[in-house]
Image (cartoon, rainbow, N blue to C red):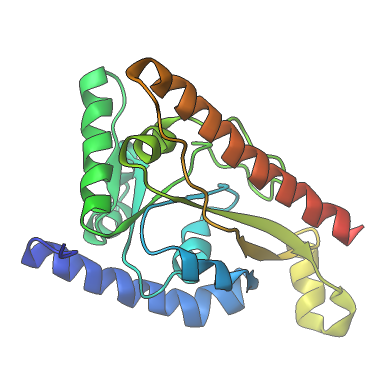
Length: 233
């Protein structure tokens, strides 16, 4: 199925790829100082749901750059569309608003995500919801991403971002950044192997499958986060 159903969506994808291209040459190497590990795991992932820990205000770049040329649809809080300039950018690249409140609103959000996956796009969801800057421990995961994964039997691609400490003695620039960021100079971005949801045997089994899959993904991501921390010590 075609990724694009309108000229508007085609233009959104072009704007998205242009913005991510800038992130690849500027944001990742010079501002966030990221190094990316595990790109071989993308060979097993064509489309589905991407979940990542929410550890930086610009971590959308950490997710989108490694997955180029894929057109990722990010989910974001509805109120973010009201932010001057930034809100226009979010709408311009086709972000999906997170709808809260009534069951009808949640159902509409799930349908929006399902529609993108049906088209062959991938949707990025931060299951923690809130941001935890430079955090190595995951906050509790919400179930939204995993409801969609179980319903569509769509794979989930977990990614983790961990702050890395670098030797500040090599240059004046590194010494200044070390002081400003308290030694946290960059991130290691790990792309983990795709995970596949269990298939419910009955309607009554559906809720248990969602909960179990959420817990399994969270456990894998947390184990990896803590494993990287142990390696640094």
